[in-house]
Structures are given as structure tokens and as C-alpha cells.
Amino acid sequence: MNRDWFDFKSLHGNIAGAREAFETSCESLFRKIHKDKNVHQVRVKQGDGGIDIFIGEFGIEPISVIQCKFFIEFFDDSQKGQVRKSFKTSIESKKYELKNWMLCVPIMFDVDQHAWWAGWKKRKLEEFSKPEEFIKLTTGNGLIDLFKEYGLYHEVFKITESILIKDTNLKLTKYIEESKKKDLCFEPPLEEKNKINKVLFNNYSPENEKYYLERNIDKSIVSDLTLSDIWVFGKSGTGKTTLINRNLIINKIDFIFCDMSSITISSVDQIFSEIIYEITDKFSCDLLPDNHNQIRLISKLLNTNKITDRFVIVIDELSIPKVSLLKAFADKIINLVNYYNNNFDNQYIRFIVSTIKEPKEIINNKEKASEYFSYLCSDNWGYSDSLSELLEIIIDEINLGYDSTLRKSIVSKSDNNPRLLKYIIRKILLNDPKDKLETLKFINTAVKEFYLL
Image (cartoon, rainbow, N blue to C red; front, side):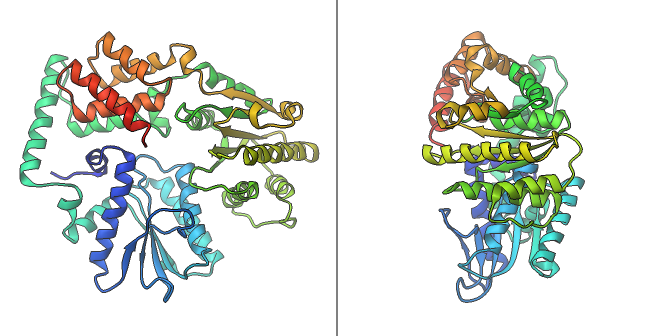
């Protein structure tokens, strides 16, 4: 039996465990490939120079940098942004000279994703005057083939004859029994597993629409965008990113997604530099004069590209612990919106800002902000039956036979957080408890684990 990257994730419990194991497995692979060279994994910390693994003598010669990104389900704007930022950090590093740069991902690219990669790579090679082999890509099946070629496949995917037989028999027995109980046609385990991943999605794509719970806030974000910019706020895990992505995608609104989750933010200028970078990358354009004035530069870049249909700049995942820094950002983004609207008449362009902190806690000039922004709170799962409705969708789609006691327990333990609810379901499915008592135990275990992640 061949195991795939979804099996790999299940073997390591969750996405965080799989991400760490993926980097370690890649290090083992490149040690085998480059036996005669210095190969090291780099511990993650601020200022690591954008390195997961490097090959060569650090500080003595140009090194090869390998960036390992455990993207298993999606490769959309958020993931592309992470790739661009990782490469930017490496190519601009003052700590080492870059010989070449490789991206390793377990996902298999579709045609559009390959087109994006080819275009981005071409622009970067031209920008830095580098040869074709300077930027490389290795994806899912290619990585698996390499693990097999270098004798690491069984170790990485934890396959032995006894485990294989036991695993296969258990899965077949479970699915046949469940199918007989429900008088359903037998569904192959792999197909069922892929469906579970789609139902319990964290990052939205159109294939997840059937399993998305539309709420009043979804209608609000679409209607508000016609008249104003939007500030979405709410606790982590309540679906801010998914809300924004989903409604822009299904309404066919073009957008730039400035994902700040992978950045340690130390200044407001850093945030606006990322916005500038995303705009120039989106439109493949060069910087204009006035580089010293970020507000004026962003406004001119947007106006220069003659946008003639609805277009949104999303600034997401601003998890900044310093309130003073958040307040400084709020002042500057409001000044940007004010400057743009006063100097340019293109009404197609809107801004969406996403923060955990409530706007009223960080906006100084509330009157000025209210001229441009409407405010939407993503925390309202607890003020309606939305979380129970989401659980019903999941239970119906995966055919889970949970009684009312278990359902109430899952909802109450989820703390009005859909991400936690899905984490609980994954934990139960992974451990396959024998009875209600054991299921309740895994619910409590999942909650404890979630808050430790």
C-alpha cells in the first residue's frame, strides 16, 4: 500500500506536528542526496534568514536554501504570499550568499498554480539576473519518489509489514461495517478520507462551499463592500480569514491578500512595505517615485494600474500584541484610505482589515474612520445556533452517529470557536473511540491540546 501526504498528516496528529515532521524528513532526504556536503535544518526563530534547510558551508561559501512549506490542501493567495516572502527574505539576507533556492511542498500543483509559479519564477530570475536553475520546485509525488529512491519512504511514512496489514484490515472492517449499518454502498477509505478533509476545512476554496455555513455576516460583508471599506474583528479561530476569502471568491471579486501571519511585526512601515510588495507582485509593475512616502506610493500604484472592476486589498492576521503599534497602524491605514479617496476617483477599490482587537480599542480618530469603514464582528457564533448548525452539517456529511448528549458536549466545549469544533471532530475520528464515555474523554483532550498549539 502506498501512503500519501494526508496519511502523513494523520500519522503526526495535526498540521503543526506534520509541518515539523515534514521539515525533518526533508532534511534526512537532502542529507542522503548530498552525502559529501554539509546539510542542516535551522531552528525556527526571529531573524533566521528565511532558512528551513541549507546545504553548504554557512558564511564561507554560497549556500543552497530549501524552504519546506507543508501546504497539503490549498495553494491560494495566502500560500503564494508565504512563498514570496520566504524567497524575499533569503535573496535579501545579509547573513549569507544564496547559491540557489528550492521550494518543497507536498501538494500537487494544478494548471493555474503551475502558471503562477512559472510567471513568478521568471520575474524573479530577471529581477536578480539569475540562471534558470537558481529557483527550483519539488512537489508531492516528486518528493515521494525521492523518498523511495533514497530508501526513506517506509521510515518517513511509518510503514512496516505488520502495521500495513493491521492498518488495512482495520480500515476495511470499519468501513464495511459502517456501510452495512447505514445501508450505503461501500466507499473506498481514500475517498472517505478526502471528503473528511474537505468537510473539516480550515482554508476555504470553492470545493468546500457545500460545507460552509453561511451566516448574516456573509451577507453583510458583500453588501457593505459596495459602499465602504470593511474592518473585520474577532477572536482567533472564529473564521475571519475564511469569511473574507469565501465571499470575495464566490462573488468573483479580484483581490490582493496581504497575509501578515508569517511576519514578526516590529513597525508599521513593515506592514505597509508588505502591501507595496503584494501590489507590485500582483500587477508585475515597478516601484514609482515617492518611495519614502508609503501612503502616496500605494495610492499611485493602485491608480496607475487602471483598475476597472471591483478590487479589494485585504490586510489579514494582524496579531500584534503591542496596542501602541496597533494604534499606529490604525492611524496610518485610515490616512491611506482618506488620502486615496480624496485624490483619486476610482471607486472600484476597497480595503478590508482584519484584527483580533476591536477597532474601538485601537482607532484614535473614530469619527474619521467611520466615514470610510463599516465594522463586522466574527464572534457571533455564540449569539445564535450557528455552531450547532455547523456541527449538523459536519455530522450529516461524514455520517457520524452522535446522539444529542455528544452533540451538546461538542458545541459547549467548542467555546463558540468553529476552528476548535473541527479540531475536536478530527481528534475523535483519529482515535476512533469505542463508546460514548471514551468519546467524551477525547473531546476534553482535544480542547486541552488546542489551547496548547
